[in-house]
Image (cartoon, rainbow, N blue to C red; front, top):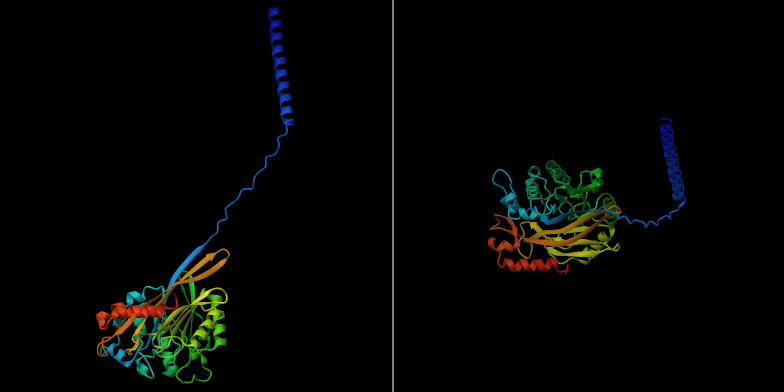
Length: 383
C-alpha cells in the first residue's frame, strides 16, 4: 500500500514538472515573437472619384408679331351680341401651343367697347382679343408701341384692368411708377425669363407730364438700368422692341446698332416689331463671348392689311438650356426656327391665320413656293 502511494506521488510530480517545462517554453516563444519587428507597409493613396452634381433645364420660347385689329377684323368677329376672336386663330392653335412660353406684340390697345372700339389711325380693340390670345397659348403681351397712347391713359387703364382680371401678364405700359419698377418674370421648367418692352415713339402723341410710366420709350440709359436689374433676378432677359421702318423687309443700320447695344448690355433675346413685314433672324456675338438672338421684325400676325408681305407673319422660336453645376449656372441658346403664317380672308370676312405652307387651301396662289421664299428670307443670316 505504501509502495503504491510512492508511485502515485512520483507520477504526479512528473506531470507537474512536464507542465511547468511546457509553460516555460511557450513564454520563451512569445518573447521571441514579440522581438521580431515587421516593416510598415507602404500604402498608396486611394483615388476617390469626384462626383459633380449637374442639372440641365430646357424650354422653348416663342414670339408672334403684331396683333393689329383693324375695323374689318373686329367687325368680322362680332356676331351681333358679342365678339369672338377664337376662330381667327383656330388653324394655328396647335402651333402656338408648342412653345413652353409665348409672347405677342399687342399693337392695338385693348381698351374695350366702353370707350369705343376704333381702327386706323387711332386704334382701340375689344377686350375679347385678349381672351383669344390666352385661349391659343399666349403667356405675355408687349404693350409698348406707337399706338399705346391712341386712347390716352383711359385706354391703358382699361386694358390693364382687363388683362389683370384674366391673368395675362403685360409689359411696356404701366399703371404707375411702382408698377413700372416691377419686373415681369415668368418661371418655366426651372428657368426665369425677364420680359422688357420699349418703343421708338407714340405717333407724336405726347406722354402726359409726370406720367412716363404709361409707355416705355427707347432710352439707352433707362434700358441699361432695367437690363441690369433683370439680369440679377432672371436667367434670361427678353426684349420686345418697336423700331425700324414700316414695310421695309431688312433692318436699318439704327436697328442693327441698337440690337448690338442691347446684346452687349446683357439682353439674350430680342423680338422686334413695327415694320408690319418680316425681317430676318440673326445671332449677335457679344463682347463677353456669349451670343444673343434677334429677329428684327415679326411682321403682322393678324391685321386687316393685305399684299406686299403685310399678310404674312409667323412664330419665331429659340431653345434655352440652363446648366446648373456646383460652380455656377450657364445659359445656352440654340435651334432658332421660324413658322410662317398667312392671314386669309374672303371679301374682308372670315379672317383666319393659317400655316403658310397650307395657305393654298385658303386662296393663296403658289403657297409652297411662298413658304420656301419666306423661310429663306428669315434664315439667310443664320447660315
